[in-house]
Image (tube, rainbow, N blue to C red; front, side):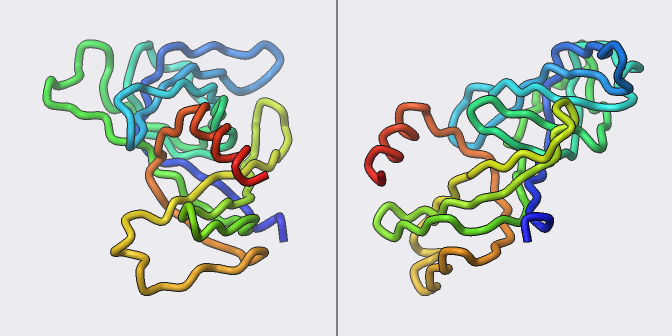
Length: 178
């Protein structure tokens, strides 16, 4: 069943540096992306083919495999240049990335209103498919008030904007439920 699990990201990223990896056909891309609940940008290490034609810094729209929320990695599958260094309009507001995919429900917490999802994505740099967990909060309550909770072990399709959760908030939540 794990072969079905996938975590994909779509959205705009700010590319700060592109480095060709010796002995590999791909490039390492240092990037940042916006999140829904915070104004700060989150850093990510990405890999991409055909990235040598771009001059940094720039803004790109990408789709790719996404894993690791503490130190995000993105295996870029498609990329499109939006704006170069001096081309960004003053009215542009970088939107949060969209995370979607399929996973297995590991935990359901009706008190704190979240679901823990086990999923995976291909990591081009490590040439592996590591697994990770993500938290889906059931907010706002009005949307979920009349719907039931899924069962642990169920397969789930998910899509949401990436929210920022501080490391301390995440540690507190994990301690509370151990």
